Image (tube, rainbow, N blue to C red; front, side, top):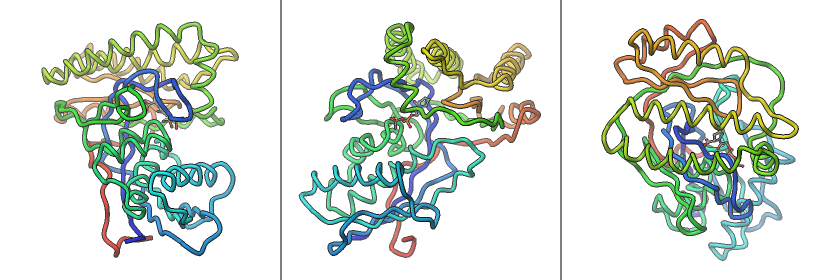
Length: 322
Ligand code: 2P0
C-alpha cells in the first residue's frame, strides 16, 4: 500500500524536555515524561507519488510553503533514506487544534506523519520504531506515538524513543490564556537556553533526578508526588529560560496568577498542580473526581478544557484518507 492515513494527539509533559544534545539526530539532553491528550488530533495522509518531482504538504486544505513545508520535506528525506525509496510524496494534514488553544501541533503532527509515512514506505510499524522516527520531526512528537503516559529516554539514536509507563488516572485542565504577542519558537528558545542560560547545567541535572522520582512516583501510584514533581520541574524550566541572554519569558502575569490560584486551591484541600509549556497557557493536573471543581475555579482566567489520557498514534482506514 503506497497511501496511508494516521491520527495522533498532542501531549503535555510532566517532566519537560528543554534542550538538545544533537540537533541533527534530535537527541535531547534529558529524558522526559508526558500524558497524551484525548482531543485535538492531527490526521495525516501520505501518498507516494512516483512521478512527482517534489514533496507537497497541504495543511487544513491549504498548500504549505516555507519553513513548515521544509520541515516535512526534510522528514521525508529521512523516510526515503531508511526505506531505500526515491519516491516523493503528497502529504495532507488536518489539525483539529483550534488555533487559539495554544497546544503544540508539532507533537501530534509529526507523530501522525511518522506512522502514515512508515506505512506508505514499508518501514517498521512497532511503536518504538515509529517513535524513533517521529523524534526526527519534533522532539515532543516522540512521546505522542504512545498512548496515555510516556517516558522518552535521552539515549542515543537507537535508544532515544518513548515507551509507555503506568501512571494513576488523572485529568489535565488546560487554561488558555490570551496573552497576545508572538512568542519565540521552542526550537530557537532551546538553543538560546543551552548557549546562554547559566542555570542550564542545573536544569539538566535536576531534570534527570525529577524523571527518576517521577518514574518511582508513578510506580507507587502517588498522585501527590507526581504533582509536586510536575510543578517544580515546570517552574524550574521557566526559570532557566528566563535566565537566557537576551531573556525569554513565556509566562504572562495571568499565568502566574493561575499558579497562585492552584496553590490556593491546594491549601483549601483541592489537590491540583500546575505546569506550562513555551507559552502563557497553564495546565493543571488533578485526580479525575476533582477535575470539574478545578476547571470551575480556573474558568475566570480563560477558556478551560478538561482532557483525559488519550490514544497513541494509530492507522486509519482508506475511507478516512484526506
Ligand atoms: C516538552 N516542549 O517537553 C517541552 C516543554 C515545550 C515545553 O517539547 O525543536 O516542538 O521540535 O524538538 O518538541 C516543545 O518543543 O521542539 C517542547 P523541537 P518541540 O513538551
